[in-house]
Amino acid sequence: QKIRERYGWTDYYDLNDTYDYLRSLANEYPDIVQLYVGGTTFERRDILGVRLSYKEGNPKIFVESGIHAREWICPALATWILNQLLTSDEADIRFIAENFDWYVFPSVNPDGYQYSHTTDRMWRKTVTNGTVCNGVDPNRNWDDHWNEGGASSDECSEIYAGTGPFSTVEAASLSATIRELKPTVYFCLHSYSQLLMFPYGHRYETADNYDELLEIGNKSALALSQRYGTKYVVGSIIDAIYEATGGSMDWAKSKLGVPYPFEWELRDEGRYGFLLPADQIVPTALETLDSIISILRDVYAALS
Ligand code: PAY
Ligand code: ZN
Image (cartoon, rainbow, N blue to C red; front, top):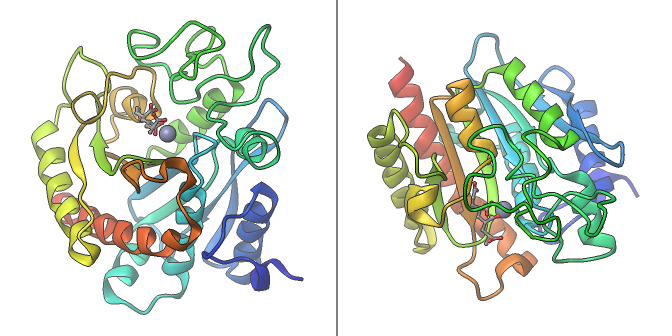
């Protein structure tokens, strides 16, 4: 059976199906969607994404989804958004589709994502052949205040930062792509906890446009809550959840100067946690898109 007949959002799909779905979009919409290889992995997979663009000269949005393997709602949400951008008639969705260039990577930790499907559903990190333990936390391996708190030098830790900044091929290669693209907006998708966060995860400084990010974030969380009453807490990573260093969003902000970075910790608050039932994919996606639209309306206004 063809992927387009098989793939949907009432179930979770593994890496091959997710990548096949991206390939099918590039086939069906060749003028709008092109495959984009964002990097490579320890097991020599591509970090595959797509560029979606309706016209020249738009500001760029980079969507980094699934950096943690077990957060399955994230790749599902990323492909759902692509489908909406391509097929929806709603004015708000057409607006964000046509006035931004989207670079969407549903699973930036593809080895880990596949491992979480085949071997260990609760896998978080990358896959490596470590000396004692497997994997690096790919959201602690970026070159910004690397391993300066909320990260670990213990190979067996869930928040193992690696042997140095960008020691993983995943973070190194993906960061090179992001540096080349220089996006205006950087979205990270994680689960769970229902938080909308922005930089920083460290305690050394606050974002240069902290007040603006907080205001945009608060409006966005309000927009998200309108549909089903889902409550999100808004704040910097260190305020909203905990200290964490060497994360991708902090790097994008401090080293690339990306003005509008946001990160969602999607549903839920812990009842199901990473094992969010598939019948919550669509409601999660709908409310999250409401919050994305709110942010992008504000960003568009701020840029014009
Ligand atoms: O930079 O995103 C950050 C730090 C916060 C996240 C992290 O630890 O990387 C938060 C956690 C995540 O999504 O990975 C939250 C979940 C519930 C967890 O695994 O602790
Ligand atoms: Zn995560």
